[in-house]
Length: 622
Image (cartoon, rainbow, N blue to C red; front, side, top):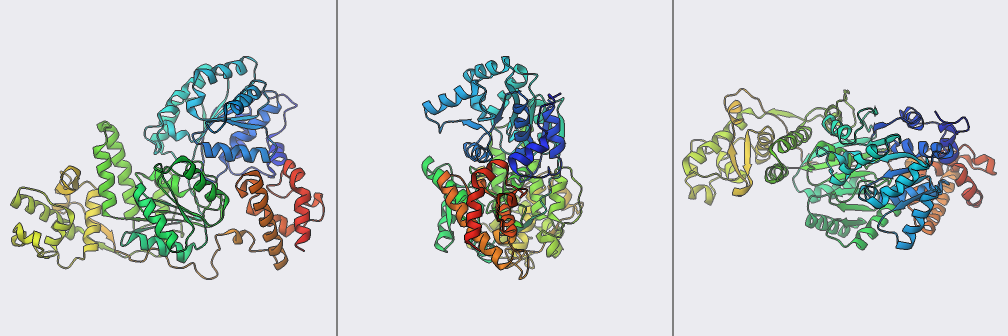
């Protein structure tokens, strides 16, 4: 148990971070870790995971227990977290490659003197002999209080972002068995969760699993028609001037889409591993510090990005699995305001993802699991019922229709595609029997629809019995049928033979009429159209919507002042104060420092550092 002189977690939350109460399971997690317990925490992005280890670290440090070590995989995350802790008056530091030799040596000296409350480091550094020797020294003197392992799904081969270096973190339990550990992630299905427990030796840890639901995010998935134009309409019609992230699979596509958006007057920047490090850093800094920037990126960008006012995340290419989709879409709306997750997908996405799995050097068992995860994402994309119900069910959570996804807001028309599916399969079979070779999707659909192209005539496929049998089906309908046949394993795609189609053992059930194929009608519109008049305004203005005209002026003045402070401190504006805190100050119209006390997000250090300036700005705006 902690000494009686220890501060309470609630007092630390109020004094340091300026919040009156913990949210959801935070209080139980913090209490458990403060008293020395191990924990595995699954909490959605924006749910407040950081406080679950930051508050215990401060409590235990003030009780004389020493230093907390935070294992974090990303330099950007370390910088922002340490910057935010400094703003709150907490002694925090990081050790990473951005420090000079002299700077790193200074941090190490402070570390060994026990002068740091939280130290952030990457897993590669934590497991080096030099760093472990420093931890040994702290441990021998009773100055090692806590290990926090952030983004813990990285330890699992079943997770969407496996990093082998995380496996070596078992040394923390083996070498420092009495030091509590808290592993945290926003995304882990049952298989990944089990792997985290085994790999990090957390069998005795208490598990805290929050709801995976992010009710402020609306989900929309559309069929690809002209994806660049679909994206452009989505951004211009619904998110003009707002911050967002657009994910693409290839570096080339990232560059093309960023250029297209920029030419249309949208402040868009590319981000991928092919850019030099300095440019990537400049683009990331602009995204974090400026308002209304759209980052077009590969999945190299994202994890650890704490920007709260990202209003949309769009996917122009399908991710590998639901975990990746959930993690990436979860970067929208961290401030709790309305946000959108939008994805366009098509037949080629299905083919590409299948090919990447089949061509990977992994073992058969791993490939089978990956195919199952891809199938779950395809089922979500093809779903005609509530997207959120499907998404939450994947993580083992039962829910009802959300009323905030495309299928709930505009229930799709469905049609029985079983007859079309059987005709497609029959055509693939007859083509192979006739020619002895396989062909791609476009050729098969031309035959079925009775389109006598040069290629069809050349191979004599206009004389097949199925030629023209599908003339009543549109190409869009047949592509939907084919997507689902590939998704359920009734058709395979041979990547080694120019993406040609082949029947599988799974074809028989459909051909015999034992398995039905139900599909959604194709919808050309990319989304629900422009934001409804009078609907929620998912911007900073939403936070200030209830302010009077004078309050709006104070809010604008405070935002301008915050931007100046952020530039001076080389930090994102939200690290200084969140929009919600500025809106609360504007509404309060404070005249004295005591008027500022109790405003959410305004802790003791920030009140001391900025209180007089805030009063000056508010006074000048009256």
